[in-house]
Length: 176
Image 1: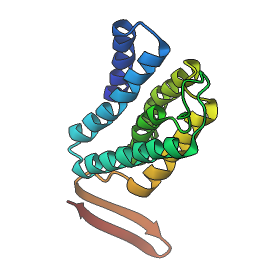
Image 2: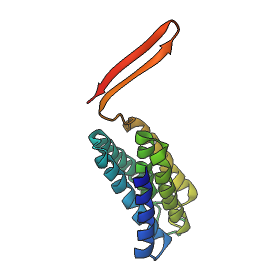
Image 3: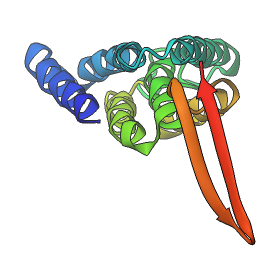
Image 4: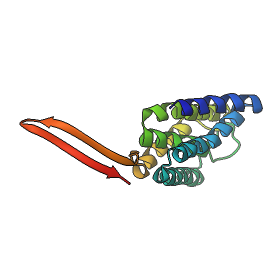
């Protein structure tokens, strides 16, 4: 948990210094970094199944968002084109955030969601998307993650004893 918080703080601090331009460019940098950080967490935990799920989750979320924006044809707030809905940059940020929440719990999900929310704010602030475009991306990431992501079960021996009426229930399992 401390490693994730440190990574997010360093990411935001370093990106702020290196890309002191606009909130749009900083938001894009954070959106690109979030899947890399989530992937680093799966590798650190030697969670190969999680690495595969993160990859599938992110590709599916961003792919669907990219496809929808070419079908829906919503005009951007800055009137530059008709590819506003949904935000594929926000989808890129929310996919790993939701994955981290679903796979490892709220301790990983909250900081990742804070960073993804910053990305969403930056897209609205720069007038590249409406608020509902980024909300749609967050909802899309939520739904896709629920399809592809399972709860993390570390490798090794697990055991437990639960008292029951008139006895106890004992369990023993090994996760490969």
